[in-house]
Amino acid sequence: MRIVVKVGTSTLAYPTGHMNIRRVEELCKTLSDLKNAGHEVILVSSGAIGMGVGKLSLKGRPADIPTKQAAAAVGQCELMYTYDRLFSEYNHTVAQILLTAADFRDEVRSTNFSNTLLRLLELEVLPIINENDTVATEEISVGDNDTLSAMVAVNASAELLVLMSDIDGLYTADPHKDPNATLIPTVHALTDEIMALGGGKGSSLGTGGMKTKLHAAEICMSAGCDMVILNGSNPLNLYDLLEGRPVGTRFCSH
Ligand code: GLU
Image (spheres, rainbow, N blue to C red):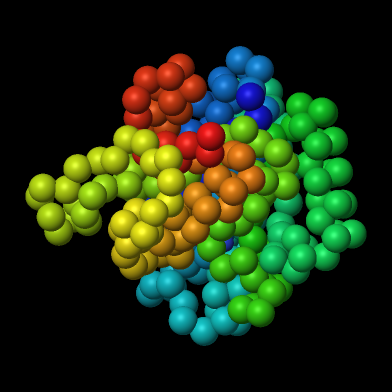
């Protein structure tokens, strides 16, 4: 199975901006194992800005664009250095791909991207994708990695997109506020009621939230790709998912 796995900043880093080492190690081990089992894995990783904030000892997520872009430039190195090191331990080679929305809009660039991606998969490389934050200002950026990962999944004709987040899945209400909120295991159609569960933004260092995840589901489902929201605090959830045990919220495209 060809799977795109997206991990958010809240999964990879502590609120301080420093890396959650145990989490990242578990993630790399699990993804390596899935590759060993024969799955094709593409990772869309956030965390560049968050880790740049940690490395530069900034007080919080920067508000101005040049500092944000500088933090991304620093943090992206840290991110790839870590992935390269951890995946090498399991004999997997990684590749970095940085994209913006303009790359998907332009037919030539988008074809170049899919050709490269497919060739990397043939070469058994694990592509790691992020937004090219250093050049992406509002008019050309995708803006959040939930949407970016959905665009990647469709472009790569993946069968499944997994969004690993700091929440177990989609709930009937905000579980941080409503004790009666229950997890919705399966979504077959993005009705107005489901879309209304979007709410606002997620963590302090990341960009997404449920709203961008539902937008990602729209992109995936209309292209025939399933999407699952899983809690990234336990990367072993990926085994449950691929072995057919109920976990997270699945958005079924068929
Ligand atoms: N590209 C951003 C980063 O690496 C993250 C965007 C997002 O969290 O959705 O920091």
